[in-house]
Amino acid sequence: MHNISLSELNILLLEPSDTQRKIITSLLLKENVGEIDSVSSIAEATTALKAHGADLVVSAMYFADGTALDLLRSMKENTETASVPFMLVSSETKVSKLEEFKQAGIAAILPKPFKPEHLTRALKASLDLINEEELELELFDVEEVRVLLVDDSRLARNHIRRVLENMGLKKIDEAENGAEAVCSVKDNEYDLVVTDYNMPEMDGRELSEFIRFNPATAHIPIIMVTSENTKSAHMANIQQTGVNALCDKPFEPELVRKMLASLLSD
Image (cartoon, rainbow, N blue to C red; front, side):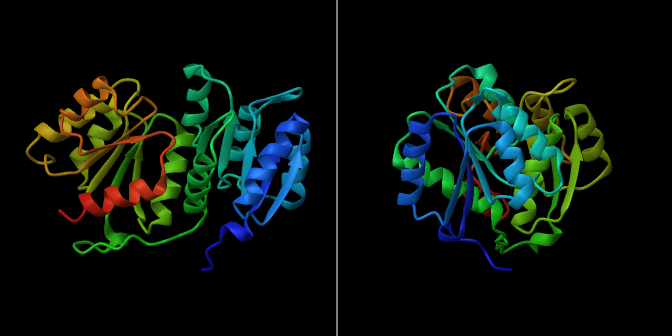
């Protein structure tokens, strides 16, 4: 399968400001992006996606006819656009506003204004979401690795599943919360658990404690994916429950790749 490069990347840029569109377009061209289609509204973006699609959507947050979240959700619900990476460029700082994007499976969030190195990193993460590259493991056949994916957001589960499948992992079970996951680990054998932190009924911490302190499951590596700051004291305490690795939402596939290579090689 041919992997796409930056020079082949077709980007749909949504930005209501003419000035901002020119600035962002200029920065994208400096990254040697192949093609940029610029629009100024949600309606125009929807039409463009239907007409010729895109490899990546780069969008501001607010428009006269809606928000980027409206477009993102409609894209995720459409099988033809569900796998298209979405990058948000916004000056919004409210945690509640950004949380919705993180839970929807966004590729990257860039502040406005952003530095060129931030754009470079976000484009790399987006390409990693598009391209398939099988994870090489010494102790496992990657296609035989049994994964339990736990997240109360269906969109987030779909996003994480897509990342894992791009790395060659095929045996992935899903659970909507920790309580459902406990039933799964009691009835099945897993080589890895990837879990969200904030969930109803039983959160990621409680699930991790159950897995770690149960002799039958104590050996299973756990990656916790969270929209909270993984470097905070609170999340450091969470890791003391036996979580092997913490990963931010949105996360970078290359970071996840390194985590998996390390955890599944021990």
